[in-house]
Image (cartoon, rainbow, N blue to C red; front, side, top):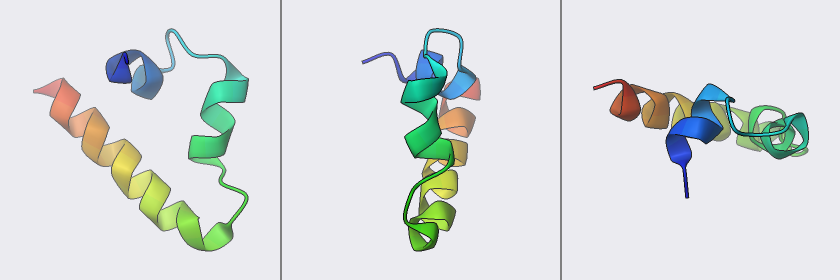
Amino acid sequence: MDTHGLVAGDESTPEDLSPVILPHNEQASPVAMSLLIAAYRLRRR
């Protein structure tokens, strides 16, 4: 699984990213964004 591609959006289609960035459950949004940011920061090191 290429998490860097997923976070950067380089190798992912909008269909793959939409559930992560815009979850259907609004209460999951802060969690999803936190995980997305955490993964991004880890990959930036």
